[in-house]
Length: 292
Image 1 (cartoon, rainbow, N blue to C red):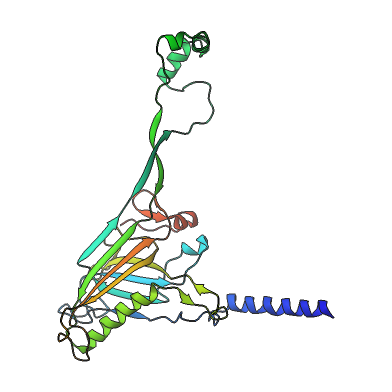
Image 2 (image 1 turned 180 degrees about the horizontal axis):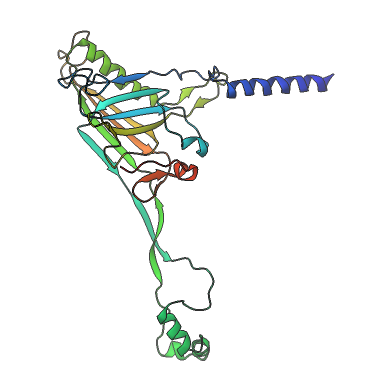
């Protein structure tokens, strides 16, 4: 009776795996409850020009979804299932691009001679290299001090994953906005960490989320206002500093000012597709993004 028990056990595990993967409400993962949309400030002199009640003409938006390790899923637009945070343009925005080169010889494939006018002339003068071969063999090349031409170039090696940094000083006008700032900074901090896994909570964690960052001009209804919009990224650093002085606080005990700095690193190499950059997954999947 061992075989039927094994088969039944395998069947149970396979069925459970399928239900966990296919289910739209995956109970095998905890800590994935979304925060919904969060924004600051809530109201300003611009009124409802933004459609979110923020009243600022241009804002920056951060959306986070569950991590996917398969490239075919990364090409999809990140919907903000875990969180969707909108803030004013930061005091400081930093974008670091680093391209690595190394000295080497350009790769070539096949060919008897150099297919250029100069290469043709040299091939003709040297009897397609026979006179050069004979000169090398007899030692005349060495005697006359000939050396191979240096054909090295600065060859592209790799492009570092771009890094993006944003800094704000968030100043709430009242206790309600103080609570909102507190929720936003804590969301960034929490979302930087791996998440707990339900069935394997003792031994496994879930990779931190994937983020999409974009700037939006609400007044003119324009997305991707700036050309340095990052590609899908991971959150690498969250720095939170409250205002100096314990007595400076809003109603409810929230800080009168909160300095927030967040740093991201793109998940995949960026590729130039002409007028804008795409991630490797977006390029392979054919997910075209309109030019900015």
